Amino acid sequence: MFIEYRPDLLPELTAVFTRFAGHTRGLDGFGELSHWEAVFALPDIDPRRDILIIAKDTRNSEKEIQGFAWLYTKSAPDFVYLRGPYVDPDVSDLEMILKTVIDRSILRAGESGSGYIEGRSLFPSWESAYIKSGFTRMEAYQRCRLFPLIGAIPVSEIPPGREIRKWGDFRDISILMELFTSAFKDHWDYQPPKKEEWEEIIQGKLFDPAILLTAFEGKKAVGYIFGQAMPDYSNHAVRMAYLVSIGVHPDHQGAGWGRALLTRWLRGVYESGARAVELDVDAENTGALALYKSLGLRFIRQEDVYRKYFH
Image 1: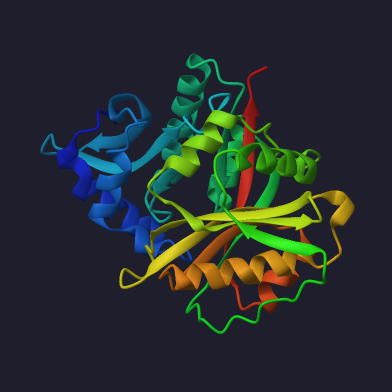
Image 2: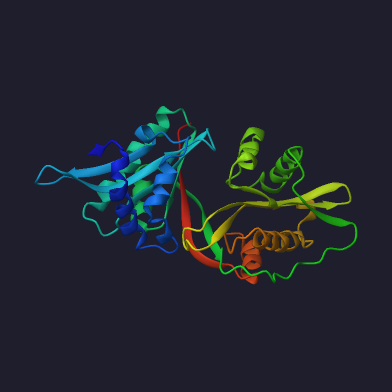
């Protein structure tokens, strides 16, 4: 059975996630009550609709929470992200719990008129549940982490005629969108950029103008990198930066721009006060993986991506 979300259930949901995270790499830091309080208080989440909690009746008529998930749509209104289901992999009736939550998520995503719903998997049981519910496996992302971030990052040199600039003003958004499209239009996960969404990111409290850089050859913009500053859920004693996106125009790839941008970005992150960095990279992008590894980033986990299209 499903029960409706209430704030007083947060301690139980946190405990459920903690048991789930005990089987993972790099998710244990999210098992904090304050984290879920912050997530479910976001203005773009409707707890009565977007949070799915599955429970069973016990002998004393109390309801024991077995797992939960939440749906996220605002950043991409054409499709729905399914976060979770967060269930202890050792729980009894695991297959039934996963299928029940996933099928209810499909129903709600379809009601919203979305083009598709996307979920991710860390365990074989989740993959099996997605496939049985009509999802198709797409690709996979690897989460990488650098800690501790030191100030002595060797900055890659750039030849004369090249320049890397910090964030200018909102007129730069059009430049970033054009570069993003040129770099990723053929990627399996590409979504056409929307100006209002990029503006929202840059106006958000997590945006730090010191860690948005644009590369130029003469007057032509050829690449960019930007991230967000946020709490480090793996180590509450430090601040972290998440690399949102890095891209280089196809005509200028292979010329060292990726390393030049990334090393300067890491230096800017350090100067902003953050001491850890995380990012997601396509598991098939061997060049990017090699670059990140050469700068000290280490693999944490892989998340396989699954989608179910409605039309």
